[in-house]
Length: 225
Image (tube, rainbow, N blue to C red; front, side, top):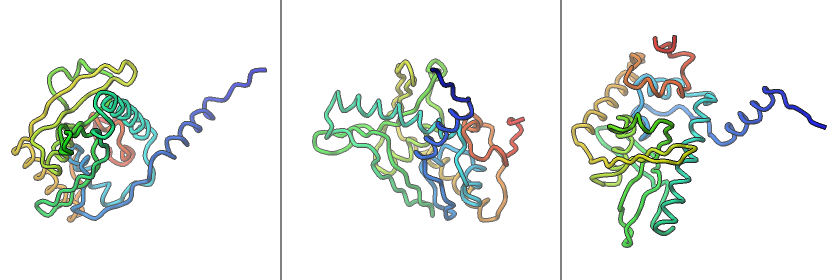
């Protein structure tokens, strides 16, 4: 005897699994940002602070899980090559600068034998490594800059991993003071708009992340049409 599930039933089972893996975000105080906010649009920061989110979208949950899995593979690969005691994940990163509080947790970090940091890794899943041939995405550089700043490092690495082939593309990134100043300026602009309850304009430069955004139903950016 063969019993076939309806597609809707299977979808619901998977959705429930993803929901069990993610915590519901809460509203936060203005001026407090995640390191990941450094690579997001100001409108997203506005919504996340002013109204919060009731539930992550299915697309963002799938992307979150996908990212976690390639990160897990890279962490285990580093442990295999070096040593478990030299690979640390989820190091806390805190920055207090220009009236901002920025915090987050790293991807795997490789340590030297004396316990100091050798390499901060920012791990990203990517199905089209060829599209990454020239340079990493600015949003990923921004996130890595947050960790480099918090952990007082002058360079770090971004690795893109294909989620099924497990081929990779790696970039070494040097800390750029001008780029960091630009990121802080954007946070300042977002903070002012949030304080004034003025909705920021949607930012086309960040549109590749829109398909995973939890605010698509209220954002109404023209490229959603």
